Length: 270
Image 1 (cartoon, helix red, strand yellow):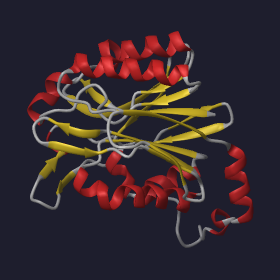
Image 2 (cartoon, helix red, strand yellow):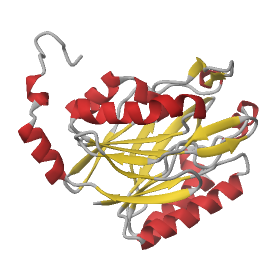
Image 3 (cartoon, one colour):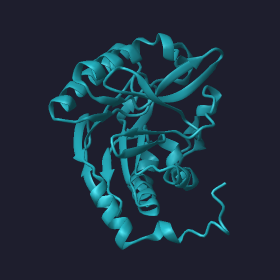
Image 4 (cartoon, helix red, strand yellow):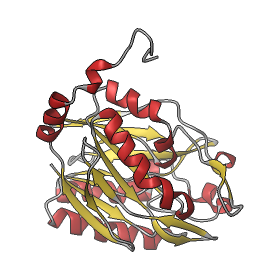
């Protein structure tokens, strides 16, 4: 399968962000991608004070309507990355996947929320606005099973192991990783998750500045089940395509069958 990734510089002007996403989807569709993934917060990334006003219900979302239309138009699957979902009085950081018929085939609400103070003294409190999800999610396209995760989830290996045990052989991670943590941890953690689970890991990141003073690291990339980076976007707003396949995964899992050596009698999957 050829997968297409969009590395965006999303800001707080939703119309501009949707126009960029539209352009990227067309470019990636023209390049032969059959699954496209955008980054976390693809349609709005701005001050926390504006997040609630920019949240949209799944069933009446102009942003999702645009993505749905493009999935049908280009006859491919599109993973939006994530958007701010309003569900009654709650707001979630939610990933949605559309199939070529425009149907939602997967939905994932980010489980681990980014409440940290990073080097330099900047504090992030995602939980002040966002309600955490409580369900892991997978979906299948042909013979590939995809596990869904978002940004800060990357730091929790038990989630990736759970997705692997659910049959995921490709794990998708849209993100808005900070510059400060991204420089030291982004590639390191992505490659670790791939090696631990002997699976493909595909990550689409935000790049650059967004209001009020956020800086995202970018470096959208694809990692094979041996932990090798097979494709990576440079700095800036870019699209990226890469081939992922089950043959590579099966060959690595056969010659290095670490997953068969898990001690479930000691380390319960639960």
